[in-house]
Amino acid sequence: MSATPTIMVAEDEEALSVLLRYNLESEGYKVSTVLRGDEAEIALQETPPDLLILDWMLPGLSGIELCRRLRARTETQRLPIIMLTARGEESERIRGLSTGADDYVVKPFSTPELMARVKAMLRRARPEIVASLLKVGDIELDRETHRVYRNGREIKLGPTEFRLLEFFLQAPGRVFSRGQLLDGVWGENIYVDDRTVDVHIGRLRKSINYGRLRDPIRTVRGAGYALEGN
Image 1 (tube, helix red, strand yellow):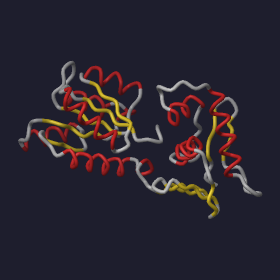
Image 2 (cartoon, rainbow, N blue to C red):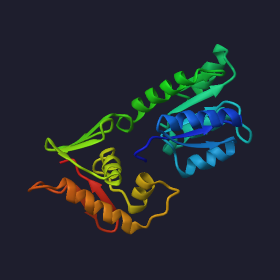
Image 3 (spheres, rainbow, N blue to C red):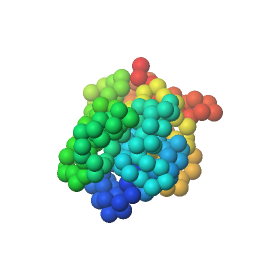
C-alpha cells in the first residue's frame, strides 16, 4: 500500500507504454511498466498495485490468461483491471469482461477518457487513496489544500510528516513495519535507514499531540507503528 496510488501498465507496444506512463505520472500516480505477460505475473506476485492496465495480447503470457490467473489468486482476486485491446467486437468485449476484467478499452482510445476511467475505478475500489479529505477521529487531512487539522485547530507539518500522516490515515488501526513505512512514504528506490522512520514519527507526534490530547500513534514493540481512530 502506498500514499500515492500505484498502477502497473502491462503493454508490449513500447511507445504506448511510455505515453501511458507519462500521462499517469502527470496525474500523480506511481507507475511501473512491463512489456511481457510472464514478467507482469511475477511482478504482480511480489507487489500488487492498486490498479492494473493490461493489454489483451502480450508475449510470454496473454493478457486474457493473466487476467484469469489473477482472479484465481486470493491476493489479486479484487485487483481492479482495465483491459486494453485492438479488438472491438462485442463478443470479444464480453469475453474480456467474463474473464474478470473490470473495464475494457478499445485501441485507439482517448487518453483523457482512460484517465477518467482509471480515477473512477480507483475511487470505487479504494476511495481513501483518491479522496481529497481524509479523517480519522479528530484528525483531518486535506490533500488539495495540504492542510492538517486536529480538534479543529490547524497543525503545521513538514512535507515528510504530512506524507507519513496521509499514509497512516488511509488504513487506521493497521500496524505498519518500518520497512513498509519507508516504501510507502519515502519510496522503494530511495535509501534511508529504519532510524529515519523513528525520527519522523517523533516529529509527527510532537506536532499533533498538543495540550492534553492523547497520542493516536501506537508503537507496537517489534512490529512498527499504527494510527488509532479512537
